[in-house]
Image: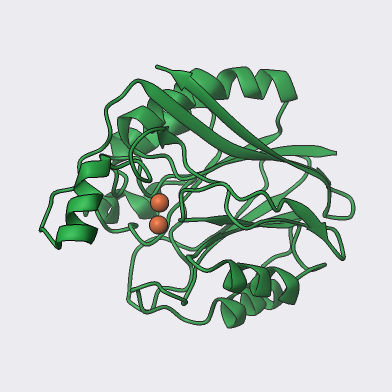
Length: 262
Ligand SMILES: [Fe+2]
Ligand SMILES: [Fe+2]
């Protein structure tokens, strides 16, 4: 049995602090075998610079996934190809460095992590996540465990992708909405599922951003600069998967939601 911890969108300094605070203890407590984290918001709320990538890997993250903000800090184009624990969305239409699915074999079992962007209510033009995942399963090297980070807005699209590939992947974990859903379950064929793992970042505000910024934009149509909420409370959202590496099936899926003053 392998224990995989999946951490939801890490937002800014508060999110990185929450990882530093909780991750070493969680790795010890659960004796985790592999840690995945979505890092698309880790640098000031959008994007991921190399220094922050290195810091998250040093904290114990094995694989960092991205999302629609993959290119928000352009320096990522310079280090992405050389970063062996970082993937960007697989189904981008544009030419872009890096890869969107990666196999980790440096242990006596193997794990593939895939990052896909959704099409519903998302502004990026991407290839079908369904066709993309089918292609990965049919053409890429098989691993004992396959985890998909589906970075998408609509729960319906997330369920559809998970059901379409139930039994063919170990788990599909949703990211992007920054709100943890309460629908963790195991689909037929042993595919673990959670619509959204939630956010790791400022607990107050709106999805990490100061509430007044968002209200000014949505209510008064003001052009506002989004600044991250600076109150002390930090949220750490994750999910712990227990997966049988001999079958690739999820045996248990348990969401984690911790709030701490940091
Ligand atoms: Fe996102
Ligand atoms: Fe995000």
